[in-house]
Image (cartoon, rainbow over all chains, first blue to last red; front, side, top):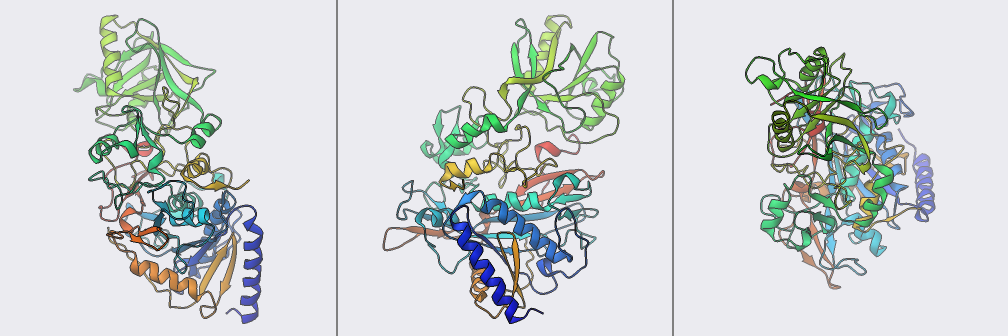
Length: 470
Length: 107
């Protein structure tokens, strides 16, 4: 299939590219580990899509990996090629749930010559870049698995396929942006992860790693390296108060993150001033120029629990913001009922003690914004409604005084720290309150565009020790 | 979580990607070294990784990370095609948990 001449020529091209990239960036080499006919070698003919010129399924997949390698290779600096072993083979999958992929470092190093932090693990690719030589010749630095059954096996995530184009904006609803997923996973392999045991709080083999050295608990006022194992167990679920303490991310945040979705109250309210709220994935977004202003009214749909807004309910003409408890039905149903009652906006109160409700969903015809507040904040509003006989006004808007995803007191970017802990997701991602969405949040959101921006991810890797390409 | 990996590096053609430029190379040439690396890694990458660090002569410490530390990104599809993402570790079941920005419905 491929002549020896072609092989020799392409290798020469490869070597010349490698030399050119030493001056600016890093050479990321993706090695295909799939057998003939499968994964990256799937010969199924396909039409070029979104800048991906591949004409077979396998070729397009390879091109996506190549594009992700190109993006990251132009972002970080290393004189040592970074070797990624990759497979696009079947992984666990059923009709409605399945593994998309995974990637991570294969080994870690500490106390190597020139290590910036003593007694601290650095992932293989990072350690190589800092030393300037391959500390583990003959071994790959990252390993990556992706699910080749998606879009091929009809019993695997039925109806979903990978989108292999590079232009995220043309990604059909039925397809998942492979470039975003691969870019996300490669970041984990480059060191966007911490290795603490989430069951015990113990460091990996007794040493902290370069990522967790930057994790800071604002409640305790200490970095994770300064906590006991027991304290780290508590800290990993300290929702909203676990932040990234590194300078690069902190400095980059204001120009990357947008204004904070907020609800504002007058001085007599318990929640005086501006409080952070969670925005829904459905309906119009909040605006800084056109706030939604109105009296709050607790929903009463007449069916216990009557404040869940799952049945149609009425509002008086002067009541414009519906306060609805979480539970019982879809968030979108609550909003549609509020909209039918004449509301301009909806506030949904969490029914769990920690955090704000995750306002996901989709429905046609939603024309008003929906936000979420904590249980404690919701209870404060209900108490004020009783105290002021229903005269409680709020303004829902984007508050430019604060950045989304940032702890208001410390100015540090939040990490994902749900309670209970979610092994695999917790602490090794940015918090979901960031807006616009970040590549390294736990979800692969539709608005990610790694071809255009890796947002705060490079800054975070710089805080772990990487040098960024100029 | 069970991983169903198919294939072997010793089989067939290898493809190398280098900074976005793809190259097809015969599995019998010098790139076999990379294939051997991959095979070695997948064979030796245990669930838990190293149980103790190796210390080299210059004081460098090193350890295998282990598959348990990989973040397996999973997805669950809702009846309307909505997507819930979560990350799992290798010994966790497929997700019932959902990620905050994409919950399907109230619990």
